Amino acid sequence: MTKPQLPHFTAILAVCWLALSLATPQSARATPAFAVQTNQPCAACHVGAYGPQLTPYGRDFKLYGYTADDGKSHFPPVALMGRETFTHTKADQPQPPGSHFAANDNLTIGEISLFYTGKISDDMGVYLEPLSYDGTSHELAWANSEFRMVHEGKVGGLDYLAGLTVNNAPTVSDLWNSTNQWGWPFDAPELAPEPAASTLVGDGQAEFEVVGVGGYSMINDWVYLEADLYKGLTSGLRHAFGVADQGVDTYGGAMPYWRAAIQHSFDHDHQYLEVGTLGMIADVHPGGDNSFPTDHKSDVGLDANYQWFGKNDGSDHLISAHAIYVQENLTLHGSQALSGSNATDKLSEVKANISYSYKNTLTPTVGLFRTWGSDDPAYWGTSTGSASPNSNGYLAELTYVPWGKQKSPFPGLNFRFEFQYWVFTRFDGVTRNASDNNAFFFNVGAFIDPVPYLTK
Amino acid sequence: MRNTLLMILLTSAISTAGAAEISISQADKQFSMPAVTINSGDTIVFKNKDNVDHNINVMSPDGDADDKGVQAPGDNLKVTFSKPGAYQVRCRIHPRMKMDVNVK
Image 1: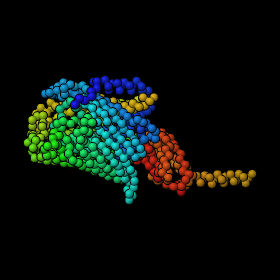
Image 2: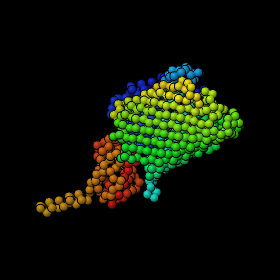
Image 3: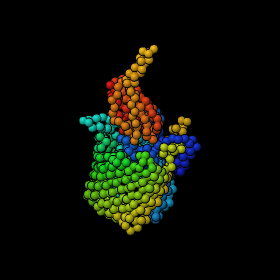
Image 4: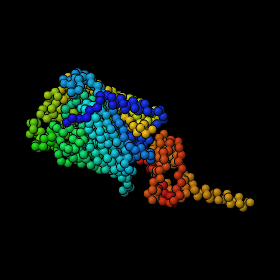
């Protein structure tokens, strides 16, 4: 299938140039549509003044269905995001990571995306990313999207907030940055090698290939419960939404997803802790081949999030830490018949990171990741030829976000400059030469709500 | 003349006693009291002591919403409650920030 393509590098620059040429310095706030809607700077909702890490207010804004606003109309609530990336790996890759790329040192558009995000009514709101151009695959598809409806009430002296979510990826509805869709690492080099093995709920295998409906509730600001039911997209819908349709796993039947968490703010709201669990069950057609039995995946995870806020809600100093552990049990009837894999496998993974944000401008982060599981040469398809799916590594990151704070000069416009270095101590079951996959990644992102400029 | 002055002073005292003014602070994105009981005709002065905007929205006992607009840091906003009933006051920008006002 031929996918629409955009001219290299020029679109992101055009967006930035348009914004810079039209903007006039003023004491204002607002990055994209949510910031305009709430009359708040990016830093009100996001650690480091740029998504996706959420502050307590950001979690509330999402929990309440994206409905908080300043009482004014800001229609249409649209935003544009672009990313330009550079990737260098320690050793050249055996094959270029794509037909348009070299074996090393690739500069490319990472992404150009259109968002429609805003309040629909006092109890309904949306976060939609209907069009996202992937500069590495040169494909246009939908991405994280969610509709929410909320209701607040009181039962037996307990406050509750109950909501409905319709979305296109497990964990896109989640409030915490430990889980996959909004989890760490928040960006990663698409043009560097990545370990072959991943879990369903821990790595977003089903993202954008499903549609789910679910209910959630926050009880007395302590207990969060959510249950969703997902269904794989039909071939026609995959085509319509730009999702790959040939030679990829597809999903059969209903896929239940569940989430439970306990949260609490303490130390006069200077500290916050969440501990939770999540899980998902899915039947998978390996390679999309419906003529074989399905594989069965069952994931269970544990997660924790901690935040410490200095004075002024952490606007000067903020520490944020996230951790998740996921275990996946696989029953591989389909893969065994197709490729001679084991009848059953297990895969586990852990990811943990901690960041410190200084004035929501400089945010260094360090983290580790580890994946381990049963040996199965036919199933994992490792790049090294190893039967083991095990990979270990570390990531150090520094982001610089100049704006998105209370007195930033350009309303509705923000940038992020991100530097990452990935270190692998084991890659696809092999420790020798694992460091060949170490990668330096530079990523500059721009986010703009164009409406205030176009309506001036 | 003396009686008139006395009448004026008395009327003023009754008026003051009948229409009190109560201060509620908005700090750390919370109202200083979760609930308050006042008399019909009383006024609440909402004082924004945060460094962020707020936007008071008053929900009447009939379910009608009265949006008081954006309230900048340092601004005071006076709201007079003239009819008895149970009101809910909340900030549109910060949905967790809410209080009940019971007007007798």
